[in-house]
Image 1 (cartoon, rainbow, N blue to C red):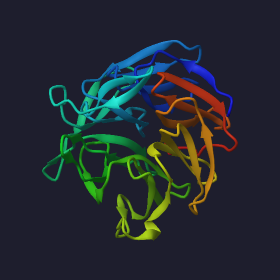
Image 2 (cartoon, rainbow, N blue to C red):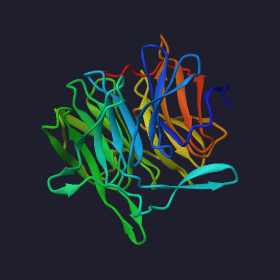
Image 3 (cartoon, one colour):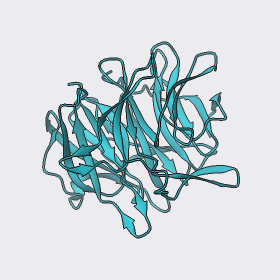
Length: 304
């Protein structure tokens, strides 16, 4: 097992780490309904209180944070000291949305709650392209016999455009871009697969079908669910893996290169920081920790 250093603990289901230039890391506490900044000395600062369920987070071209809010799609469940995302509770659900959060003031602004007349149910993860537009996944909700079919969206930060680009998907989660910006990757949680689509224009992809094997980068065997992801400088997809807790590294050709195990079956996300982008920050959501480890390769420098 890789050597990990605890950066912060007693976090309430941490997710979506973002390494900032000042050496701090900002993340969401999904069960704590807030965005928290972990300063270089380990001090925690609440950036903003967030109603619903803060989930995915990215730094935008204007220096603000852009948030996928799942609306409170998950309740809290604890088994043997591990926190799990529990069943949907309609009494606490406020509806999904994409939000802008001012990193300094903590001001929160709703940008999108609907697309083409359909409500956003559970936005999950987000990445910015070189144009300053955001790709995000719509994970949907599961309630009783209802299991949403959802999709992949593209939107602008000024609230002027939101488009459903790919439909249908089954619980899409982590999302990322190849180093050249020409391939979009996303993980689908319950089928344990990473899919890819060729980007042909701003917010546009080639015709996509999940039935076309060329669009499936890789699938994991056994009971392995997939969560959020990051891409490294070699173009490998580093996807957080649930149940078999850790980070699974998949090459651009679909080869499973390695599995970096953690001690938490609910390992949910990874980002890269440090001067050489070789510090991997990983959220151990079940244990309520942010940890760091030295990664064998540099992470991909994000567009913003």
